[in-house]
Image 1 (cartoon, rainbow, N blue to C red):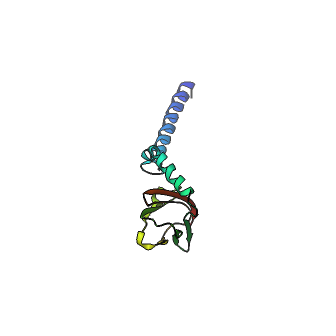
Image 2: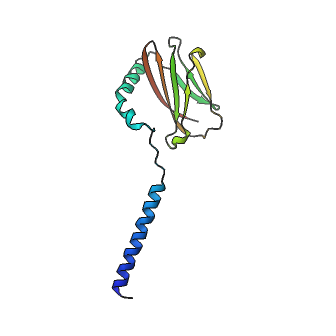
Image 3: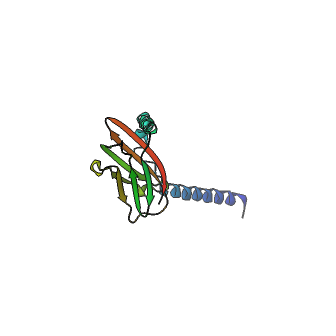
Amino acid sequence: MNFGKAIVLSFVFFGLFIGVLVTVCIRQEVSLVSPDYYQEELDYQKKLDKMYNANNLVEPPTITAEQGKVSIVFNDTLKPETGELRLSRPSNARLDRWFKLDPSAGNFQQFELHGWEPGLYRAALTWKEEGKEYFLEKLIVL
């Protein structure tokens, strides 16, 4: 075999190698933190204001996870009018879940987690009370 054939074969194998890499990269799933990531970045100052409001509370709400349930306990002075609990799994966006807070439930709210995969979740609690918005985030392990 002469050098001309070896050079041509090396170019052909290199082209096949690049084709396989492109195919693997295209089929790879890439999930952002959230589907509307860019809009959330534009609204980040609003989120900072909500975090500031929550950090200035004398006694912020507590978020706990145990025995297949996530519990939120507000102190007696907090009465959320509306709100949402978002549990997001950093390693798999398909496992993210949202729960609406029930204002009539009082200071203790609990959500069932039947059939969830165990692991690390980011619990993001947003609520509104007397015209002020709040945001609290905590890492929990199920």
